[in-house]
Image (tube, rainbow, N blue to C red):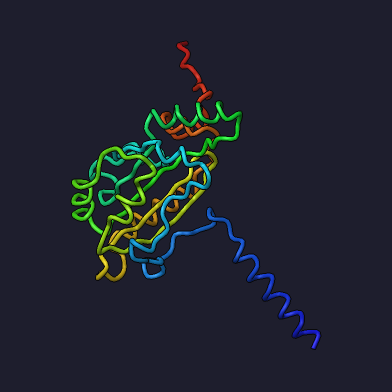
Length: 223
């Protein structure tokens, strides 16, 4: 009887730990384990009560910008993550976050958002980028980029990294099975998990090892 109670208590503790797992504890799974849902059902970006943030804009990132943000080395031959499209905060958004935080005496959020879409093929990515705007307000991302992907399924991953929240979406056709670009998705997820927290999201304008805008790299000295 005592042994049964001990086993029950142990099971409850394990279940409780699983329920309270931090979003950053998500690990890269095999393609068969990804939880794909219709684009109409998948969770979008979250804003809480900070409605003004919806007017802040994000822009499509150039390939090397994504590598720099993820602290990955540049590739010499093939384009990196050819099936991936990412949106980063614009300069306006970075400045607006600081202004909003100051005007609200610290109550306004300083957290910025990065949205990464990993498509099942380079062809699908190219087709979507022809339809999607190069720059878009955060408040329209859910409607135009996520809900607008009719006939598609998505798997969503969210990671909080200090002042930057990463939203990663794997995208495939509804009639697809598995995920052909699982390696790219796995690399991106592992890279985001490995990132250190951003102290100041303006670091996205700098080098990957610069976590704050006040960082000054050492000067080269001639001998």
